[in-house]
Length: 370
Ligand SMILES: Nc1ncnc2c1ncn2[C@@H]1O[C@H](COP(=O)(O)OP(=O)(O)OP(=O)(O)O)[C@@H](O)[C@H]1O
Ligand SMILES: [Mg+2]
Image (cartoon, rainbow, N blue to C red):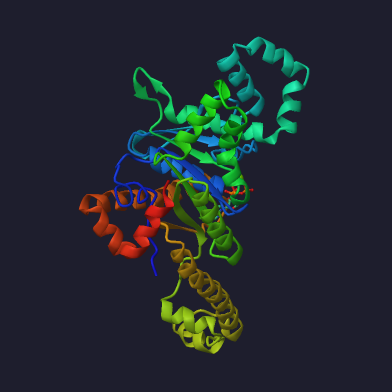
């Protein structure tokens, strides 16, 4: 059973001869598995120790603003957090209409005309009748942020994208290629080619967030196959909301099989001078059994996750409401894995990869990269 892995494994030499780091992290996953939360925590982790990271929201739901407890994000890059060690996370919620105006301006010098069209409702109309257009504009903006330079230096060390769910991710990332087939020359073709060159390069990694439940693991597996088939680079699997064992494994397995009762706990409760008698002991035993069953059923799925053959990182199920403190806690876990991987790469990539998952599986991971 393997519980570690990281975001850098996919590029830090372990599976790619070019050690250039991934700079465009696309976070997808089944709905509700924690894409937005993981994307935000990953942005904090990547910004630690002085990095500059842009976190992009693509679904227009202002989930990032809520998480960082800031007012709704305008279509403008705004600082939402200072990471550990002074790094900075900026966030951008893409407004499709604004992105289209940018686009018209960039290629056709049509900003004023675009504004007039907007007033007439034509832009809303265009983006709703051609949903593919929406995705082209969003992926275009992502590429622009990843490649942006100022005074010859990159503006962002990394861009993290809170992307559409697994069911739509391949289409979303590949839509520009579809457009390129429609336009065989001209600015749209040039733009599409540029976007696909970034998204299919080792600069990009599509990370998949899953829970230790059947459906999300299955969707993750399907998405990996689809992305790989479309030549898009698959990164890590993030197992989110994993229950952490509160008892040693032996005890958990025994409890899960229903062999733990109040009578087993009563002597310890009496020795600890806890009143409540049989009733308390039975209630506690029921809770332990429930936790143990949940842990055992999750644990069984760890093998399925491992069989996906991707670097894997686990994040715990946190209690209480999700706030910035929780994000920093999750970011800390992600940072640990980022560090592990840097160490692993320094020790020798292929050895590390073999130690981690066996030579055969390592070769499978290479196959997953574009
Ligand atoms: N590690 C965690 N521990 C506890 N709660 C979590 C954790 N990760 C996410 N959550 C909670 O789970 C819920 C879903 O998370 P989130 O909104 O990030 O998922 P999502 O995949 O972006 O959802 P959607 O598909 O609706 O965009 C939220 O209430 C969030 O606070
Ligand atoms: Mg979300």
